[in-house]
Image (cartoon, rainbow, N blue to C red; front, side, top):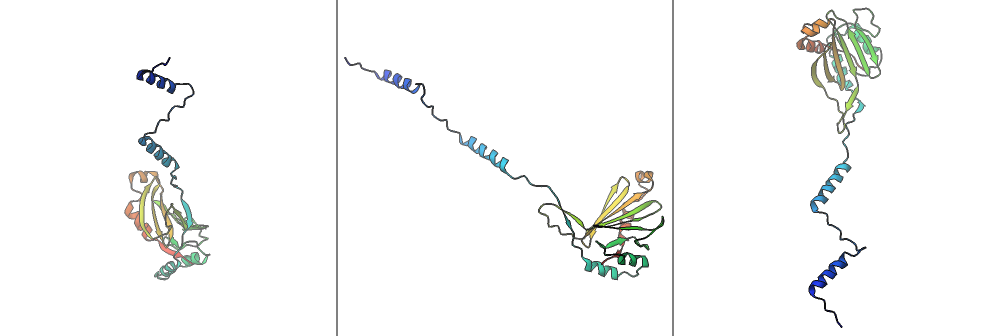
Amino acid sequence: MRTLLTPALCALALGACDQLPGAPEPEAETPPAVEAAEEEVVQVIEAPTPSNEVERKTATIDWNQARMDFASRESNDTGMVEVASGGSPVVPILLPEQSVSVASTGEDALQFRPLADGYFAVQKGEAYDLIVNGTDKLVVRPNGSGAAVDTPLTYEETMTGAQVSFSRYGASYLVEIMCKERETVLDGTCINETDALAEVENLLIAGTR
């Protein structure tokens, strides 16, 4: 005897076959938007992190120009010549207009000391002391050329007075003005920007190679 299956029964039978144990489930497709987001996350993670490290280099000094400026001075003090001939300076030496030697002594004498990367000098004063620093060290950031060029005077107030920075001959200079009395710093009577810049502009080249 033949059993006839109606279309409805056939549909039920096929549905039961699809739900048999062990039958693999169809893989769900990932929407394109989700795939794009995942790729973007991977790119962000794998992107290189820029470096903010700085590199220290030794400046190239324009000794020819320094010698020309030294020779063009109207007068050469004996003390200034002693600084120039007391050794081979690392950078051109800029000092206040006062006789000085490497072995200067005395409370009022301009004190000078050569360093491995430059020099520093201290000029004592009544209201403030003038400290001159010169160095051949450069701080170069990534992708920087590292070329040192002459820069104008930059004035900045400090907790002890003021400071003026600039570059010349390829070297870097910092002139610090240290006020003797704290009260004069607070009320602004120690030194102002005009006088500070004038002090630095009056520096003379006192030593070269």
